[in-house]
Image 1 (cartoon, one colour):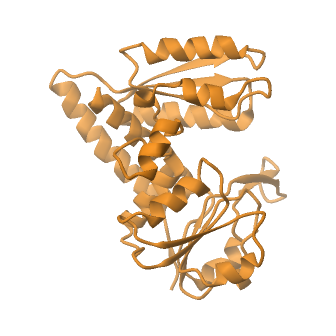
Image 2 (cartoon, rainbow, N blue to C red):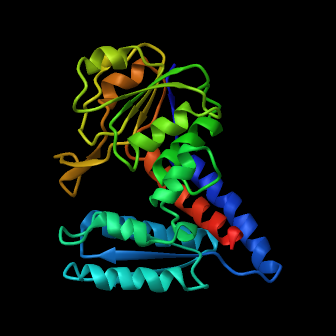
Image 3 (spheres, rainbow, N blue to C red):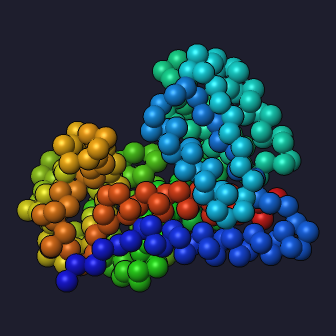
Length: 289
């Protein structure tokens, strides 16, 4: 029988655990962890995501602040703001919400953030530490997925894990984490240049779909008893919702779910874990400081 992995429930449990620790720090006369978000422009998805992050901070007792810029902001202005946050002792960690307008070089922005405050885990120093297995800030979505495996006690050691997608934010770091000793899986990464993707997927004990193509993973690509993690969140038209849109994952959930031992829904699976991983990284940054 298929077990639904409830990311919402697990993230609530973790937030409760963080809040207990934060309350104790404050009772003992310590400082609230402080997360700052930089938001450029008025992208609807980014806007709601940042609002969720602020709400999450309130729930666990963190201080949070939001710095807004118009999408006409120059790269130099943005880099100057980042430099100020790097040197602000009151801020433990901060994020620059992506994507950024086309005239701003995202790599320059990511590299400008101090690695000690890079709670998104995107800075090359933190990525390098993750690759070599050193303690660091890990990109939020892969970190959240690893936490789901642990909390549901899903066996990963010796398992054949196929990751669909090779982005620097999800697919690539996920492949590294799954192949390290802690998770101990044998990992294959498939992408737009891979031939015979269905055959490769069919052989997987664990499938992690992170390519941003709605319903890409179909039932004929999944073997009986596989664990399926759906990272996709694409907004598609729907006549069944008031807004006229719904979130679709990379997995054809309705047809794939009956074949799985475990599966994440969309929404309510990986999304809440991405948000809570950011809180864990911010709490870690606060303790490090």
